[in-house]
Amino acid sequence: MGFALSNMQLTSTSFKTAGAIPKKHTGEGEDISPALTWSDAPDAAKSFALICHDPDAPLILPGRYGFVHWVLYNIPGSISALEPGSGDYTQGTNDFGNQGYGGPMPPEGHGTHHYFFWLLALDKELNLEPGLNMWDLLQSLEPHTIAMNRLVGTYQRG
Image (cartoon, rainbow, N blue to C red):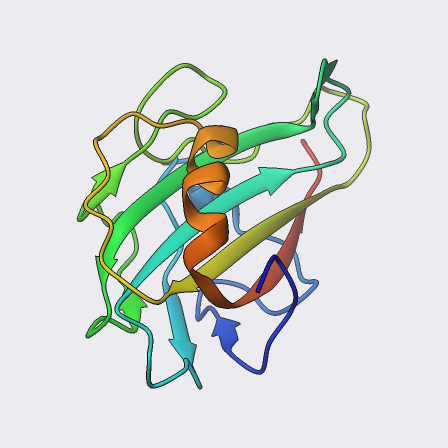
């Protein structure tokens, strides 16, 4: 399929689509992941993966751009929500160099950044090892991605 948007929906009770992400979900607050819920996943979805990426971050490396805040995968197909601060499932490595969620914290004076929470539905359980970065994960997922969509939140450092 490649990467194309689908009818699957990703929402949050922590923030609205295109709305501000509350401080408690950022590096300036408690730094806990927001609540996320998804619906309308394909019946064939056997597992999910989730990524939080800030394309507004002023970082460009060969073949890469922006800043990755969260890489989460091996989420079973029976799951359709994550609670705030969820440490469940397999954590990948974010651009802070840690495994798990690292909330928004753009450079001071850099304005509003957009945080894309991407949900990918997969046609099989891949049982990938912990610690993958976003780029390696996407390479592994691409042949198995049957649906995807995103939720965008914003944050401006105070």
